Image (cartoon, rainbow, N blue to C red; front, side, top):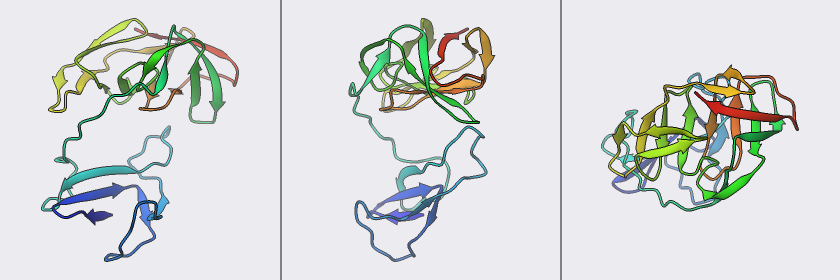
Length: 192
């Protein structure tokens, strides 16, 4: 779906529309139902993507407008490398840090992404960060100051290699992809 906001358009992906072309919508209106895309990996839940673009080029996958994030400390960061399984399904487990530290955007401070399974991660506040003691450095800095690093490492969960972990802005939980852990089990994560 593409919504015109004047010279800028809002592109919405992974939503089955319940509105028709020409309909007007306001903040809070339902525009459709989330749907699974064939592009989703097996561990991905239903979600929507929102992209601001120039209206003269609304369809391409690249070329969206650069967004400048406001970095706030919203969630508690992980202090140490031990986590408790708080949710589990057949595709992944959700973990919370046993010990929590200062506030950041994710449990890893200002690092966001799915590593190493999506091959790259983002450092929201510069070009260097630490993931449980493993140093990562940005290979590229975007115009908004966000650094992108190559996730060329492995994740161990209780000593066994897993597919990876995902962390999201404003969420204190970590998604663990791989392994067979039960709710309330303690998992030690390590990056090698």
